[in-house]
Image (cartoon, rainbow, N blue to C red; front, side, top):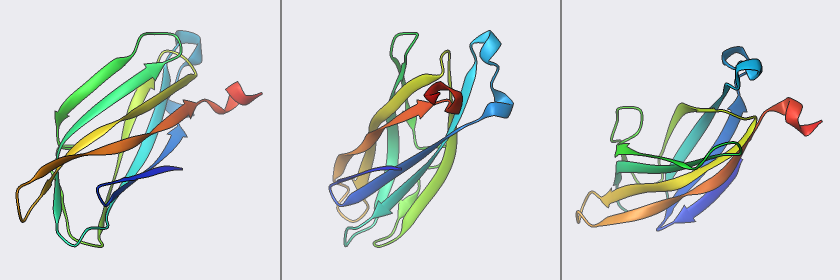
Length: 128
């Protein structure tokens, strides 16, 4: 698991290779990842936008940008956390992701970026 803290918000990411949804012969490798967002501030925060950078070892970097995560713009109370699972497809068995979330202090409406740590996506058979 990879973790980082920015502006009092802790982001932790775990990745999982999805063998049942992958087809290595066709250069299709599917990964799932679980993100936990923990608000260590004394005020509630809302996740407004995401900006991902996806690096595949066989292709150029991709970017994914948009509102919220998995169709939600969650408000996270102080000392609470929000967790979601999503996925990413690669054309090789090795890659990485990282990015930022645009957050808002619900009380003051001040916006700030929170870093998403770099995490590796590696098919288990690649380690051999």
